[in-house]
Image 1: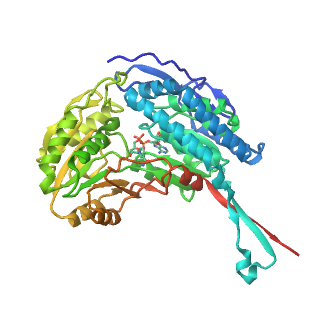
Image 2 (image 1 turned 90 degrees about the horizontal axis):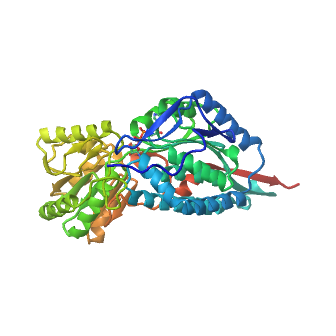
Length: 482
Ligand code: NAD
């Protein structure tokens, strides 16, 4: 497995206060497929964070106004530039991350949509007039509200969708009139630097954006604790989310955390359709996706057919080099993650689970794995696997499935397969999750949806329009006529 050299090199190892920086201490970015060096970025410090946040705060509070029409135009230009640079972005994203080149290209195209959709949210900032005429106390008054920026947004992102998840925070923050300081994942900072360069080329004011690669415990924690940061928008694991909440105190936060993707296949479902969707949802990006399908509950009369189809489709997946167009499943982000997934599967097998395919590891690669007869309490059922492992469980009672799913600690998105609309709505309305997709798995989303979960899966909602709402606040102006 070999990789081509990247065609893009960053202008610096970090960007803040309107210029590129070249910190003396750097972090190596390694290709998870073969350990080759992809690039070096700054290993930023808490002092760098302080400078960056103060510079962005100064730009937002005291810098030149950045009118809404200019924000909208800059983001539309950014989307067009991303289309032009699509191939270079896809290659970089694939090399430093885990996505096969085909999926990397899809992520870049999706990020184009995210940036365009953000540009179009300009109208959302307009607000409306206030109904002073509805009450005698409002007499002789006239007023309205508009949506104003919260100020400085700290954006902290994970490794698994290294471009689109950055775009999901940075573009809504900018259209809302904020400044933004981005802390990308340690493993995938290069694409975040390339995106920052693109924003500058598109005309985003240089003093309103900053990107500081570095460690979570250093850069991330310093950002969250910084008094001039007004809102923390975080996507990542539950444990990190907990640490952030402890540091952030009463600061505004939006958190998109983990899931353990449930699918319910009812007795009248189209099994062929369900099987294909389960395989796509479980093994895309080697299962490193918050929406990844992890548990499939299937009506007992359909279990044999579903299992047979899922196993057949899974064995047809091509596990291989990310650079190869035919590859469906690439590596996990590092060997520690692959070994963790392996140990969780081993634990399930020791407890009585049967492996129908997969359960093989080579370095950072873990083969797509289908399990049945998994014992209750196994971590592949109760925790977020974040790897290519799916468990299939027969059921006799929908009520028992609903109770089981609602008892899980996560509740991001779920899917239900059936031809019976009443049955679909019954399950959809009873599950405690952020979204239920009917005849789709919970792996489906569009970026305009309110996106987030119940329970441990998050705090608040993202999805571009909802992120803009979270990153702005209503500001009233009222006139008392004499
Ligand atoms: P992670 O929580 O380990 O890291 C995410 C980011 O947080 C990184 O940039 C990291 O450096 C930073 N960080 C770490 N410690 C910090 C601290 N103390 N203070 C501030 N920042 C800190 O997550 P990961 O392994 O990169 O990503 C996988 C996780 O992300 C999974 O749990 C997955 O479900 C979740 N995720 C959720 C969504 C969603 O929208 N719900 C989307 C993608 C990924």
